[in-house]
Image (cartoon, rainbow, N blue to C red; front, side):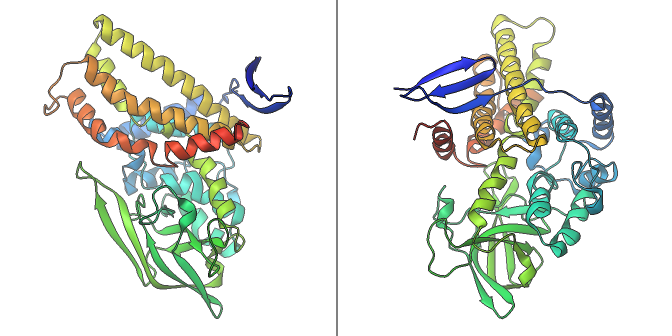
Amino acid sequence: MQRVLRCGDRLVREGARGEALQTFATEAVDWPESATALREQVRALVAEHGERDPVRRANCWTKADPAFSRRLGEAGLLGMTWPREYGGHERSQIERYVVIEELLAAGAPVGAHWIADRQSGPLLLRMGNEELKRRWVPAIARGEAFACIGLSEPNSGSDLASVRTSARRDGDDWVINGQKVWTTGAHVAHFMIALIRSEPGSERQQGLSQFVIPMDAPGVTVKPIIDLTGAHEFNEVFFEDVRLPATALLGEEGNGWKQATAELSLERSGPERYLSSMALFTELVRHAGKHPDQTVRELVGRLAAEAWTLRLMSASVAAKLARGEDPALEATIVKDLGNSYEQAIPELVQAVVEMDLNGEDALARVTAYLLQVSPSFSLRGGTREILKGIIARGLGLR
């Protein structure tokens, strides 16, 4: 028999013998004095260079605009927490959070640099050799190098450990063969960080390594996957005898599983995990006007309250990262709850507002778009079933 007890702002799960199995805590975030100036800076950039189409403002972190990414790099808003030695700006995790929150809330087209700035750059700084860091990290901070992540493979579903793309040694080089699928942004990326089986005959989580693969390397082929809205965000990537130098190995050989799963903590906790449908919330408020009917008023209040709660949880994860902690459990919970929230918004709006989904007004257009794409929100960064298993283990339930 287990109980969940509240201790202040902390949830403690108590085991059968009274022992504390795990905790989960939120905290008030100490926003820096620079936050207001940063918000004003981002809003000015978005007003000058941002996206006008309300449909493209929805789910905007998948919408690529390389010119806008370069503009952010010039403004010092990429690589914000990284060392100056590698083109960064040595600002805090919370300052970076302020910037990405503003970009997402405004629906800015940040898809080109998003993965590189969020996780590839930090992973290179932590695990990369000097050659990899010098080649890629400063260019990411300038908004001139974009990345994609090579994880999913055909016929594997959510089973990441079933990787079959292989890396074999040939002298001092590695030769890569195989295929990745559902690779976001591969068509605009300059490099991929791929999880590849580097030990022949190994199975599951053993014998995997990460490699940094330039997308213009001979033998790399990218083919588009067009979704049902006609958008091109996903891709298939094929590797046919792709030859890489020894320095392309990221981190330790055979340590790829641990590295890749740690990297997912950076992917799962950010505000993109609950703000993908915020453009629709904004259009709902505009539609409601100053005197909305009761059902619309109640929906606006409900969505605002849930968004504020998710914001506190997400920012708490950023605060833990800033202290050097590993909030993997909290990040996974934010991802799961955030996806549920942003997936629900289009259905809730459709239920309370009469509209022609084939119409040209902004509310109808954004609702129609998100009704089509929002089912995929719970797949990226780990499916809901996988995440619930991670959460159960983290809470000591399995």
